[in-house]
Amino acid sequence: MKLNIYNTLTRKKEIFEPLKPPFVGLYVCGPTVYGDPHLGHARPSITFDLLFRLLKALDYKVRYVRNITDVGHLENDADQGEDKIAKKAKLEALEPMEVASYYTNRYRDATRMLNVLPASIEPLASGHIIEQIEMVKKIIDNGYAYQSNGSIYFDVEKYNKKHLYGKLSGRVIDDMQEGTRSLDGQSDKHNSFDFALWKKASPEHIMRWPSPWSDGFPGWHMECSAMGAKYLGENFDIHGGGMDLMFPHHECEIAQSVAANGKEAVRYWVHNNMITINGQKMGKSLGNFITLEELFTGKHKLLTQPFSPMTIRFFILQAQYRSTLDFSNEALLAAQKGYERLMAAIKTIDKIAPAKTSTIDVSKLKEECMAALCDDLNSPIAIATLFEWVKTINQLHDKAQTINAEDLATLKKDILFIVEDLLGLKDEGDNGNKEIVSGLVEMLLNMRQEAKDNKDWSTSDKIRDKMAALGVKVKDRKDGFDWEV
RNA sequence: GGUCUGGUGGCCGAGUGGCUAGGCACCGGUCUGCAAAACCGUAUACAGCAGUUCGAAUCUGCUCCAGACCUCCA
Image (cartoon, rainbow, N blue to C red):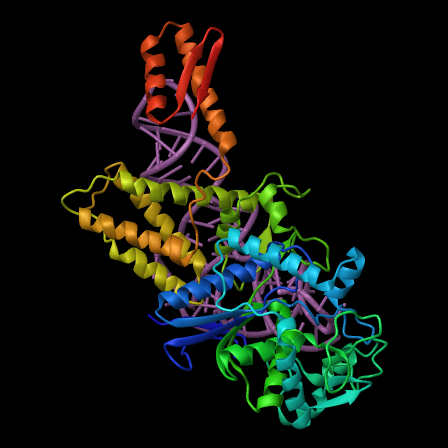
């Protein structure tokens, strides 16, 4: 089965053909670590985790590179633009790397909870300064960058004469000139749309490295080009990220690669859409985001209850990655119920008694789910298919249909493969359910107490015996009961 | 202003020319001491207008509305 994937570059779904099968190079823009990971971050994490899992299931040997941006990401592109990490560090009186490490850990914790597989390589921008400097040198040597007050800028106009700047985002350079004319503080740049490859650090700037041009730091777009080339080669298969990165970030990456190496690096550009809240993009700059921790704990004014990591994952997978997905308590609650129903059905499989013959065709499950996922990661269709099987499983349990032992084994194997291995959904089980457990035990024992009060001894003994069998010891007292596991 | 998406039933969300996903919620029924679960069934929809077509949610045009990007954002 072949993967069909939407390529932003061509605005079409294309059959995926790796450059060097069976190897696949996948690069995805990770977070800039200056704040807590939020629901928006979960989207690309899960989307490309699904792609990673699917590619592996298709027997490709995948090298998945997901970077951590810990330097170079400016607040804006003007000369006075402040590095995001440095700014946060100043605010909290910390070493910049302290900030970066803290939020990197927070990000890793959150993605682990979402059952996102670790990337093959998770490089830090700050660990690849040399590679970035080397790439800037190449661009300068090829005549596509100029120096200005110790900073190096990419000469977009010159590049655009030979190549097409804007091919990914559909942007035209002449239009852009008008749109951004009003910004001040760009005296170092020849044109407003030129972007920084290397920035000279101001005296108070802490994060700085030596370079042939000045003590400074690399521009944001450099890191992905440099690290992608380092770990995946000058030519690789897939580059992913959020749609909001399409311009300027990814556009600049293309220009940098062409300017440095004479060819484009990426074959397939894949972009996930945004999560919205009340129809508006959820984003740090808009201040309307909900962090993942807030979701997991329910501590946010917009949340009526906590939502588990798997509920979030299921919620995101219920939409196709190229559509916007609107957040609401109602939608999350629906996702939670649906997820629970799916998990319950998987447990029910073990209770089905095999029959001599099957009235169902088990082979279709895996086939249809794989076909859906291979069609541009259509996880909603895969999930819809799963729910048809949830119904079938329940019917089998009710003996409205029959299944033989062999098919039953296949059914279980395939459904676990789709749900756990591909979609990455796992049973959250009893973790952290102590309150529920003790609540349940108390409730049972209170019921038993009522039975005892009514002298319904058979019931009360039955409850005690069954609970004992489950490992709950009941101790009667004069005025009630004690219990322990 | 430029570029680009999208508007599907109470909510979320698939679906690119006929066969009208799926989840959640609702309603009726079966089952059940009651409840829950499960099963069976019903209902509700394609922003508007015009056009193409035997036939359009799906194609074309226009209108309205919403959103994204054009400064940083996943």
